[in-house]
Image (cartoon, rainbow, N blue to C red; front, top):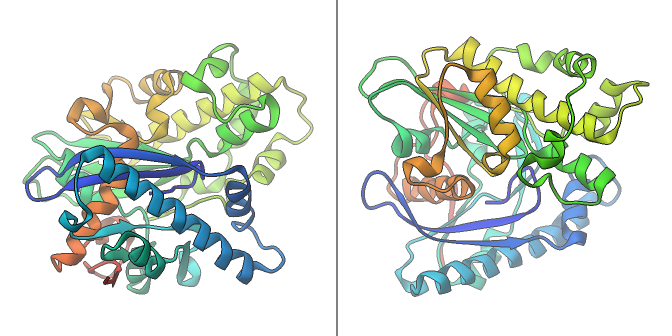
Length: 358
């Protein structure tokens, strides 16, 4: 999995033979600075996009292949023991309202390099059925985190998304949608103003108070009030969006960072309260689960519900998304639907992805 944070690739070796699915090993490969810049640039219109996309897809796939080698070595497992690879690709343009979502990938090349069948292109089948093509981890969240009480699962990657899981056996539908920015703008601000890749532990954001006037301006974004199903990405929550919202305000960089951190927490809290108020607790995964300041703000926004990291339920936060797409590859091989129509808005359950056999 390589997500909207565009920092690198997480790979897991997944055992889907029993419930819940388990991660047996994990590896991470960071993107080179050049590849990261190229992938971010390709999220916006620019010159020579077709050739640049083709070259970037090959480079990205080589990182995928290296991450697969790393995780197999860490687990001590032969590649012949692996049924398939679930390779999501890197989203560079998400336009479900226009009927498409583009993930850079070269799955045929990955099958050659890894010597393992590859399942890729997970979003397009849901989009073709009238869905958003996102978020797609919700069916995995049911398998991994469902229980006797209703629960909200919040993934804080570059973009944050919410899955509302009714208690096991309940007739109520699962809901899910993107809530807004997660780490995307936080990481951008740290890189631009502090020459650091991210705010480790949220220490910088904790050093000052947020600016409430800026927070109010950010919260005026209409996307936050749109009803689900809905999804978003860098197309909306870009540095240009932040500049427009800031206007002529002159604030210390740390203050802006603290305000962006509060924004992420507040929009998640509002989404839970408005669309899944029955949640008994909040399970957090993704890179945002490592940000202690963000989690404290989220506890306030979601009070009185407890907020816990997914590690408390057996899956490390930075492995959840990769495990989800391994599980979706498993669902494809088994001929089972991978989407949740009540989440994406698709006309029905669909088998997601396309198989690239070795």
